[in-house]
Figure 1 (cartoon, rainbow, N blue to C red):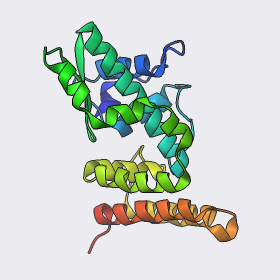
Figure 2: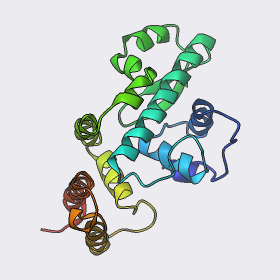
Figure 3: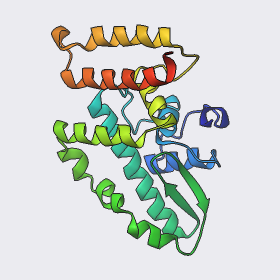
Length: 204
């Protein structure tokens, strides 16, 4: 687990997000998931991502975009230096030894142009975010989706059982229900997370 591998010390606030991610990845030789990197950035008080719960769809999108923008910038820089190759996958991100063919891999990545165009962060609408979140949950299938759902419930630290999940679900529904001033989109995210967690924690 990344959390047990990395020391919980503050990141150098003078470093940009790409350098902070490089620091984290160098301390995790087996790699890390996007979720783990985000949690480490938050726990180390990075000022480059929103310090807000990921339960809000716009916060989730902004955090995800900023992290992937920094990862692609970092990968380009490492390739230019011919020092290391950064493997960016949906469930694992890790540093690999430099290989001569690495630049071709960067050019072939269809996501690179999207994340390096910061207008996509500025111009993406709420409807666009909803579509992207559907893709996010698809990419997070398996342990990734469980971790992401627990993060939405703010239950990623410590032991979790189904009774605690149900309690947290009721609290979040009460807090974010549209009848109480919440948003329908946020309630849908809560319901989706509950649907996922039921598969892992409820008993037949």
